[in-house]
Image 1 (tube, rainbow, N blue to C red):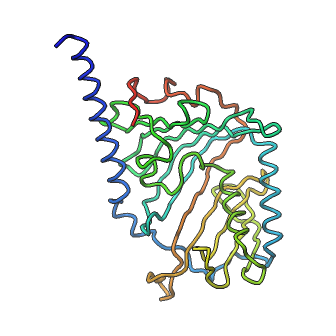
Image 2: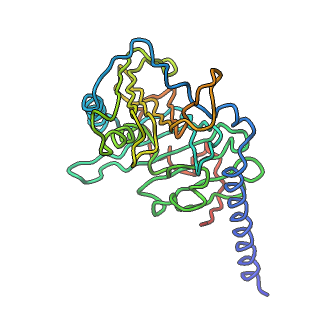
Image 3: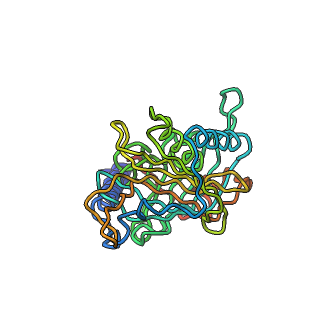
Amino acid sequence: MNRNQILLLIVIGQGLVIALIFSVRFKRESVEPDDSVGVVQVAEPMGSLPEGAQESTLAEALTIARQGLTSMRAELIDYRGRVVKRERIQGQLAEESEMEIKVQCRRLDKEEVVQPMRVYLKFLRPRGVAGREVIWAEDQNDGRLIAHEPGLLNVAQASLDPRGERAMDGNLYPITEIGLFNLVEQLIARGEEDLQESQVRVTLAEGQMIGDRECQQIRIELIQPHDELNFEYAEIFIDSQRQIPLRYAAYGWPGETTTGDGDAASEVLEEYTYYDIETNVGLTDADFDPSNETYDFPAFRVNL
């Protein structure tokens, strides 16, 4: 066996080991969440609306959401901050995760993409994945995401299909749908699902805080279960000054879980909250480059 054949076997062996690491690691996270999940499995009781909440209409709520989306598309170039998320996947509420996030927003000129969407994530918690980094750019790497594991498992960067099984394990949505735009689009989609004004209760509440930012809360509550919808109510918090969404959450109809008062509690379906958001900060190609010296991506890459 010559030298080239030996090197080829080494590379193949490394690829198989890395594939096994990613497969086991992602699968373990999706089926074996930490015990701490048990303390955050229910939402606040539905009866408690924010102080000062005012009755509104579905039409008004959707108008506010659409206006905010139009404003963001015109003015938001990029942003960075932190995102905290919880998602119910196949009936099981996953552990809360927190990530640093940088996003370059997709911008269009007459339906032509003049600025592609790009995303950088660094996991801060849960502890088992703290240090994991992920980069996805729609104009790079054939649309595949690049990721690496933390600590001793950081032996290579993996190139993954963002909608493939490995990338989707433990995630309700692919990385291609992350970000502030999606928060507004989610609420609009919920509100447009063949709903009539008589089927919903809509409230608006000013002066609600997300971190240190004052927001307007929009809540859409179904009066009774809907054949096509799985949620009881959904809400979004819009930064009152900057008109960008900082939180979106949807809750399912009460199940067997009860609150401290003995009432059935609404189940968390999905929650996304953004903190310390800085907008139009001038992100560059380097922010979405695995070879960035401030990141921890190894040089070796394998396609999985």
